[in-house]
Amino acid sequence: MTIPGSWYLTLAAVLFGIGGLGLLVRRNVLVMFMCVELMLNAVNLTFVTYARMLHDVGGQALVFFVLVVAAAEVVVGLGVIVGLFRRRPDATADDFHILKG
Amino acid sequence: MIGLAPSPIGLLAVAIPDLATFVVAAAVVLASAIGVVISRNPVHSALFLVATLFGVAVLFVEQQAEFLAAVQIIVYAGAIVVLFLFVIMLLGVDRPEKISKDPLPAQRPLAAFLGLAVVAEVLALANTHWSTGAKGTAGPPGGPASNVSDLARATFTTYLLPFEITSALLVIAVIGAVVLARPPRPGEHHAEDDEQAPTEGRSLGEQPGVVEPRQEASR
Image 1 (cartoon, rainbow over the protein chains, first blue to last red):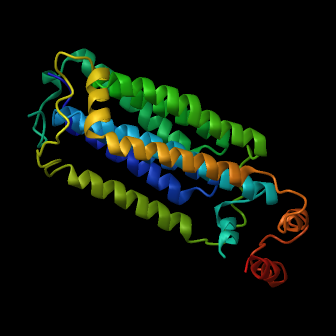
Image 2 (cartoon, helix red, strand yellow; image 1 turned 180 degrees about the vertical axis):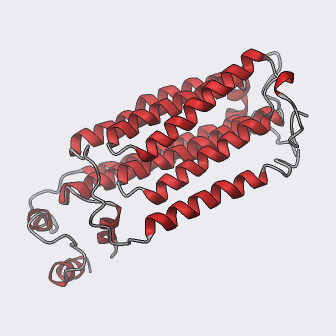
Image 3 (cartoon, chains in turn orange, brown; image 1 turned 45 degrees about the horizontal axis):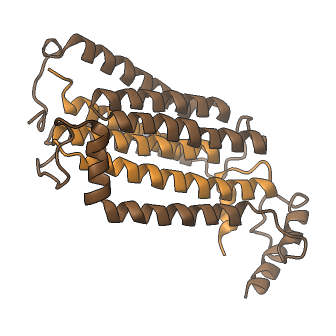
């Protein structure tokens, strides 16, 4: 008997909650980014678990797209962060209000 | 159907190696995720993130997603986290964040409360049905072929159009990153902002003398 799928889903839910909690609590932009990665990983784990529970490989294929979106998001987001820190080295997430037009 | 509704399966019904693998990987994932959040140094957060990604990869292997586990380690731990560490080292921001200058004092307790509420809500949903049992069109993950060929067949047949769109997304991201990270040329109109920004006060956007010329220039 393998591990029931609900265990994985509960673990993914807790991981998602930790990521969301860190995103809300932390003020460092890079750590907030890592918390977004935690949330994306929780969703990936959910996809893979459903692929096993429902016998459907489409869940595993969707993880690819999450990976691509995560990579694109990190590239562009880190570009914005580098641009901000180049102007002011002690920036936190609140300093991003200079982006408003 | 495996566990569509959480059935009262005891610990003894689960094979011991599977159970041990799950428990160890889950402990690593949760402890490292908490470490990402509570570490004061961003470098430590990045290293905890690597541990979390490895734990998730172990859980992928346990659920017959071997190729995704390899991709997880290569792409996430090998590329994305290295990119994080590269930016941390490049910018020299590997120091604790200053909490003294907190513009929203009520944000942290409120955020902690809301985050815990999200966790509680999602866990409360665990007592109901996890899924409807509806199937997709991509076919089962198991079978005589390997996981890689199943995944490749689904990706290049059923999900071919989304797969192609992701390539466009990656090209857009690369172009955006090049445009954002390119240092300003001396002749461009926002070069003077970069020079006088460090001498100014904390908030660049709230100074009308700085904002208005840029708005004029952008029109």
